[in-house]
Figure 1 (cartoon, rainbow, N blue to C red):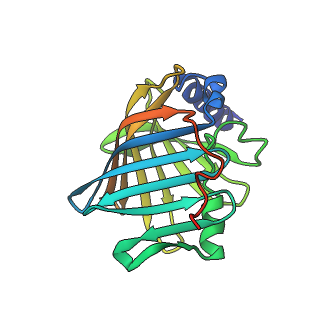
Figure 2: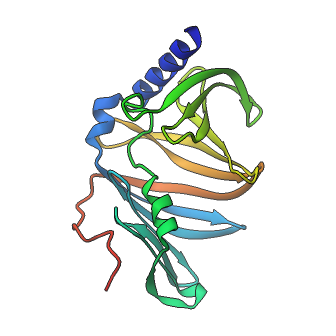
Figure 3: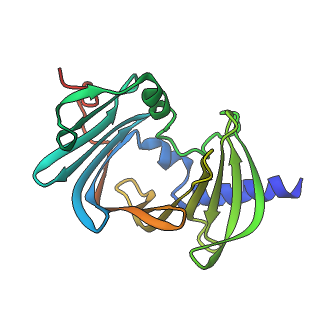
Length: 219
């Protein structure tokens, strides 16, 4: 099938453009520091992620820390702006949704994970043309991926919710990490074509030293 073969070739070249699967798999965790912009407000942000699906996000706003984290078992939040100075464990549904956000690049061993991909031709996004690939996960969720026609780096992802809301993530400012792999330093999140949020990394540290309990909710 020429279409699936084309999708495979595009994905292969994309993973190679990032430095290759071997280098990508050397990265077991990362720490991003930078700025998050939302509604015209710039806020310092720290994001720490570790495989398979642990994440910790801390945003500083008006001198207070807003934290959201998932430790591999449950999600928890701490938001003083919502009259919650103490950390609160999220609902089972929220934790289940967070558990699906896998840290490893979704295209590594995607067939073994039960996902399928197909080439959807040339797609237009941000007023430019890109290779468009659709991934259907083992749970039936669909995401469209837009790859640069020359560099094969990922420019954008696009998903549509059950309510018909189109969520688009646009990636740019790729730069070299310590181990010779590449990662985007800018992510802009659009909802129905309007910019909702931007994350602009000033530094990305790979495999930082992390305590086992780093992602756990403080007691």
